[in-house]
Length: 531
Image 1 (spheres, helix red, strand yellow):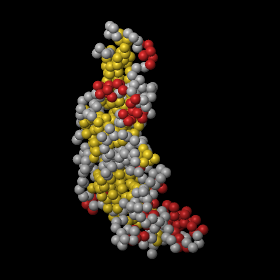
Image 2 (image 1 turned 180 degrees about the horizontal axis):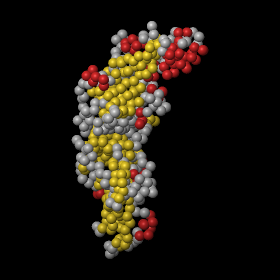
Image 3 (image 1 turned 90 degrees about the vertical axis):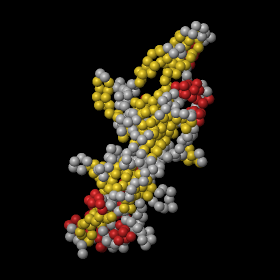
């Protein structure tokens, strides 16, 4: 007769049904009432030793082809407790369908045998709107707190922008019937020198940067006017949002963009993508901060872009007098194929009483719950021993305590656990743990102690352990612990895809006895029949 193990929360109802329908299951006829009245069953707990080790992550999928992350990291996060992260971005650029250097109406009205229209570039800059919270407004302007930043905001990281010669493709070049993929450690070749005006631009985020002043010049280098550039959170708001503006080389963009507007390179988006294949926003250095920028805002003006300001001057070709000036601005969004680039330092963590969890392509934790299979029968020896006890599993949880003396400046609000499968019969070697989709109490959220200090993360894996100890499942794969990403959540599939654009990091205690009551163990609550 097959042994049936279920959680005690459902024992009464389910076993009543079984006893009414399946008469052969006589051994279980009175289990429900016995457990409730505790007349024939004892309820106990068991601490099962585990092994949790550091697990380096070489790369993560980081493009927007199959899933748009929306958020992209730029900057540097350096901590002596974790791997240093230099986060950069590569992106295609979108051109407007009606892009023209001079409007057709202006040409028809002002371009004659005695006049000419001369274009002067005023300024070019990369616009990167911050994510921010408005704290107050006054006559001197708004006050903001910048969100989604980790690291030292008072120190600069080094920024450079480059044109890339690598063609960014949505389709796999080796098999165009399939979608392409890019990873966080992919290499994108650079063309020419940096595009910014000042090489190695020192980038420090500033919540007070809500306005930019653009000087407009006529062809005779005469100042025409000064435009005030602001961006608001909605079409109805007049409160300017903070944004970073990084000046680009005007002469280079006159040659690359303005001088090419009427040529074949700008005939279509496809032609442009082949001509100007993309831009690399590169961050480097040993200090500074890491900023998350939103590339998918509902307000188009708040999406990162290249802003080109120029002035068309109508002049009399005989007297060289200025007849009229027209101010223009073209926006080139960072759109199309995008990819996050994570340059991580190679760091070997010592084998001690700690384990490190770091997002992006940092580090995860490998967890072996039940140890070796010495007799090579495909089932861990400890699982076989526990099965022989005929326990009814009430609850199973795994708790990891935080080393509060380590760096907690980039504290993850949640960690996530998934499982690996070493099975040649399937191409999907990562899957969800059953409780992640069968229970609402899967957990992994940051818990604080009575003093409000970050204390621990707990996972409830009752269904998973029940299946292992009942024999419903034999495989005891290595589990992995990572910084939670919104794409981790089990929704409609048990397949797990390892994305990560969270830069958070935490140090946990492992199973080492020196950790005392804070060591990591698998706690099992069970019921068993009294002798």
